[in-house]
Structures are given as C-alpha cells and as structure tokens.
Amino acid sequence: MSDYSLLIYKKCCLKSYTEKRRTEGIKIYSLSYLEIHQDNINHLIELGEFDVDLTSAVQLMSNNNSTRYFIEKLIYFSIKHELYVNYIICESQLNQFTQELGYFFQHTERIICDENTLEENPEIQKHESSLKRKALLINEDLDELDQYLEKQLIGHSIFKTVFIEELRTFKYFYEHIGDQFIMSILLLGPSGIGKTELGKLLHKFPDTNSPVAKINFANYKSESSLASLIGSPPGYVDSGNESDLVQKINKSKVGVLIVDEFEKANSSVHNFFLQLLEEGQFDDALGNIHDLKGYILLFTSNASKENFLKETPPELRSRFDLIFSFDPLTKEERIQFSRKIIDTFASKSKIKLSTGDIDWILSNIDIENENNLRNLKKTIRRNFYQFVNKQQKEKTNDLK
Image (cartoon, rainbow, N blue to C red):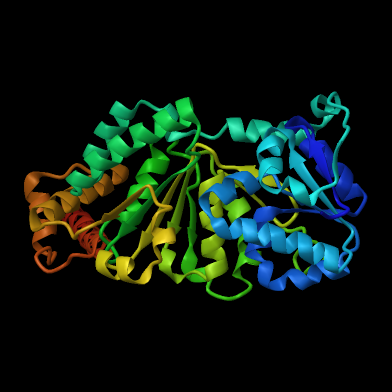
C-alpha cells in the first residue's frame, strides 16, 4: 500500500477542476497519454506536483492486460521516486477501479467544486455545444444513406451492403447498450480505387459545405509524430498551439474522420488511435478532452489483405469493426464512373452535352487500361477542356 489518496471528482466538475489546476500551473495527465509515452516516463521526476486521471483504467484493463501492469509500474515508480502526484478518478468508475487496484490507496477524498460555475463558464458551454453541432451519420436516415451511396459510389456493391448493415448494428449498440463508441472501418487495396472517396461521400451526406476532416499517416512517421498530432506537452516547443487532429475535427461539422495510409504511421500514433477507438475520446497535450463518440473513423491502406493480415498483430486487427478489400472497378464500372464525371463537369460549366459529345470525350480516354480513378479523372478533365475549347473556337469561326 502507498501513501497516496485517490481523489474523486464528479464528471460535471472535471472542466472547472481542469481549469483550476491550469491556473495553478499543475498539469493533468490522462492514463492513455502516459501509457503511450511510457518510454519517456522519467520526465515525471522533474515535474513537481501533477495529477494523473485514472478514469479510463477500468475499460482499458478489460481490453488489455498490459494496462494493469503499466498502472502498477506507474504507482511503484511514483513511490520509489517520491513523486508529488495526485491520482484522480471520476466517481462513476470508482467502485470498479477499487475492486481491481484499490489496495494501492490508503483512503479516498472528494474533489469539491461549485457546480453553478459550469453554467457561467463560456468555455465549457462552447465545448459542449460544439459537440452537439456535429452531424453524426447514425442520426441520419440510413435508408436514404443507402440510396445515396448506391447512386454516388460506383461499384463496390458488396461493400455497400455490408457497410450499411454494420452501421445499423453500430447505431443499435451505441444508442441502446453503450458498449461501442466509435465505428472503425479499414479499407485495403491499391491507390485510386475509391477508398478515400467513400469517406468524402460519407462526409458530404449530412453536410455538403463542411470541410472534410482528413489526415494522412504518411506525415506521422517520426518519433515526434504524436506531438504534431495531439500537440506538444506544456513547456515543450509549440505547446499551446492547436494540434493537427484538433484543427481538423474542430473545422468539420460532421462526425466522420478519414485517416489515409494507416500502415505508414509511427507506432505511438497507432497506439493513440487504438485507445481512441476504445474510449471514444482523447486528451490533447493541454489536457482538453475531445469527445468523438458516435463518430465513424475510416482508415485506408494501400496494402493487400494478405500483407495486412501477415504484418499486423491480432490485437491491432481486432480493433476494427469492418475490414474490407476494395478491388479495381470493372471496365463497365469505369465507363459509368467516367460518364458521371463528365456529367458533373458539364453541369458545373452549365454546358449541355449530347450523347455524341460524351462519346467523343470518352473515345479519347484509355478506359480499358486505366484502373486508377484519380488518373482517369485527370484524363477526363483534360479531354473535357479540349472539347469545350474546340467548341468555343468553332463558334468563334462561325461568327466570322
């Protein structure tokens, strides 16, 4: 048993307590943050007083035995180095936590806060209201979403059926049972076959004007990548600046996050996202809690399913609710895709095209040998412009 007390807070008081500690210059670390950074745990010795929030411990321990070991190691480390640390926990998790690890703490104390200040604090109101403004796909008409994807996403018919069924399942368990916070999808397959496009379509369904929330793991390969993603801890370079992930989420009004090139990130970034999928929320480096419950996280990878299964540990694979391989579109589907792109360009240009006009544009495109839809779209763009330019020149010559 240690000399530490376990400090208990009400959920409604956490924000005011966090703000109070910030003004006192005392940092609060989530268990997730410390576990991700456990290789650098020695920096805690130099901190002075700080808090560790153990609220996520129960859920993390139920899914990962190594979390229990890490908590024990952290407490023994605190005792050995006589750290000035306060362990805090939300009252909703107290009973379960004390059954597991209560023997480490001599007694418990309650953190007192004035609950009336919650109504007066505009920052708290702003944080809560911003969450309510997010458009979640599970709140939309899923039959309409099914029809929308059938019309907008060319090919991938089996996936569309499976996805809608998985989304209905997620909606039920999220709303009625509460044991699944985020729906996670991993799409595998070569570049340019529609994986990211699916995410953009899901994003546009509830709000066509909202910026798409998208990050690319190819930008997070280095050891310091996590700091770029969730921000630098207080006292470090760039601390206080809004992190990449927070910026993307805050700018978007839709509960969909696209994460491209999943396989390319640093392991600490992978671990961060795995814990986000478990908890449905994350703490940035400044201690702010960002709630993503109800979100859909769409991960993409250019790896084949065989390579993914061979190279990815089972505990990582099990975090995804749906893993699916996208195949290149058939020739007929690529023609359908090309016609759809031409129709879109014509509509936005306010140009009426005849069937012969469209056939002329298509005749100059090597649809037979081009599987990459991005390259195909680029070729269509060039040919569409050439056609429009040709038409304009002919009209000019006729006037002469």
